[in-house]
Length: 449
Image (tube, helix red, strand yellow):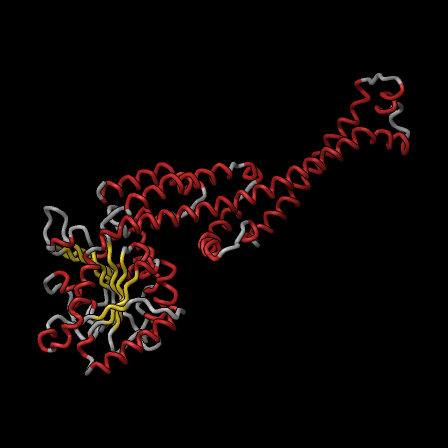
């Protein structure tokens, strides 16, 4: 089965089996839906002098993006081939975020300032018929630069969620010291993408004066990455250079194979789409499972309180049914023939003798139930809303990470619960999610191996 057919099959199964439960638990599935809409994406990040545009121009075989030592483009630029029958064009951001066929409608929330700095260039290039690159504005040092006018980190995070491959580029002169670079590596990317989708590149090595200078720059980048990622093991870092410098400096030819591997990796990004989609579906399934698990635990605790409340109400009502008229007879001399006395002495009970027992049973039972509905259950709801993490077992790092992603959703669901929600069959939802994971996700993973 080819990639497009398998993607369509996955999409159909998700819509038929998973989407109804996602809607039931108000779980956001926009990332998954957006990813299935369009072409594979490669996001290219880096500071303004890291060689992003040079690399893109080389991949396209022509100069599409302006290059230079200073900032040359402050927009997120989407680059791809035009649709069949269409010509090359420059499409403004307003058109992109309003086109339901594209995965960018959610970007409207970032405001007009972002939309004005978002566009698409369609370029005739065979390799880009099933691939799109996102060239990003150069990262800045937010301590000294003016505000962009929109939330740059949040925009990068959303593009990273969609991207099948993320290229993070550095240059020897600013090897990871830019403030936005630190924020992106430390916080933004870990929340949006798996490490397997991030590629680190040190570009412009042709500007190093000699091998010792290159080694110093490489060591500085490794040190900075260890500080930003919080890890001692450093990921592979590709080394590359401006293509026209290879002739002038023969020693750069040592890195020619490395440079070619990087280009091939980018052009093979469409092959990563199915794996990325399955990762996202699997992630969504695990989040949905934990939400349903939390709501099941909540319902179980609530039902225990409810049935204990019903039991207490019946016991209190039963006591009044049997003994209230006896107590009234002792205190007030009324009624003359209590229900229980007549039953035990003669075995005959007249209808009028049941009036007080039945009335007392009904009133007391109702009052106890009302008290429980007014105080006992709402108190339980508030405790769950205050500490929703107590509804699930967080005994592994993985489950704690999943919980961090779904906590707000669970809290929002708990804020809207009613007594009738205690009797929703969450166990059935958990079983359906588990079956979907075992039957479909594992099957698709096996198909792409």
